[in-house]
Image (cartoon, one colour):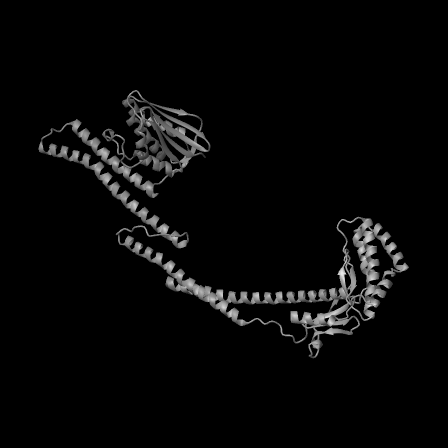
Length: 543
């Protein structure tokens, strides 16, 4: 199955999923809109009920409420029916509009015309007591006045007093009946029974520590003011058969189609974006496989394709570097072997032609040259095995101090011949896990390097110590030191700071020493001061 087909199949799956999800989301949103519509309808019911209750308070009754019912119905588009608690009709927007009354739906809500007392914030008990009683007394008078005027055929309109109790005013221009009603109302007062009941309520509110004093008296006011307020009415909003708002399928289909097209377009763009770097990687890999080499492929972004491109570039760079190292190694080996082999050939030809007479000294020199070539070959083999991970190690617990002592014994003869003192300093045990033979080989290479750099009368010290979870073996000499510019090249193959002093050495000793130490999980570092000597440090994990 091609990558393009898999991408298109995945895209189709995404498109179908997105379409279904969008349709579900749209329907879900539609359901939410319906819920919001129901909530809004409930708010409309509350607003209609509050408006009718306010009418009853302002007009001290339900006379003339038909005009208000008609206005509410036209404004909201809702059917409104008002009945008394006993079921007598007060007003119906259907009948007022000249059409048959439809059946009501849902429960009725009560429109309460009783006034609500508003007490001042942070009022004291004395002020609260005065406000409640004076407001109750005022409403007794005002409601009596309003009933008297309406009984005489007039009309009243209310304004809200300081404590929320309505005060009624005539709308007929001050007729004699209105003056008579006002005089009669001014003489009205709460009954003696209500005054006694208020005092009992006052004492109960003073004893009640769980309820605020004002709230306690406010409940008394609400319970007793109903005797003088108009009766509450039942309000029905809406009618059976009234058309509910419908949700069309057009927007849902439109949104789903747009999402599907967007998903397909995104899939096409995704396919092109994915396949372009894949083609570049394919062409570069084909060139690499043909041996022509491959330059870095262009990479942008941080996604998986970009990561693949960066990994390919790193691989191509690593292969190119490996090939370059191989070419350089072959050139270095050829360079190292060319001169001594030419010397051997020259001496052998001279012996064969009788130019040079055979002597033990000449044969000894030729033997040393052959040993040097053998050492180069052996060192190259050890290094190749170590770098490929094929070099075998026989690990066991070993003390670096013992390794240093064994190396001193092995190289003491060469040190004495060179006039150099070779010493060992041990500062406690330094146990590591390693191959004793390979560790002695690494340290021996460091000693041979130090002997080559240290003049007669100098000193080489092998210092062993342990600390911070590491065992250290420092090889310090008092030789000529190393130039700072040469330090980065110390461990390169066949590199010598002074080529003229390289006789008898392969140029691989430090490289092999570092590889052996690295294979033991350690590190090999060097510091040097020109004219004062050098220190090579082997650091290995303690056991």
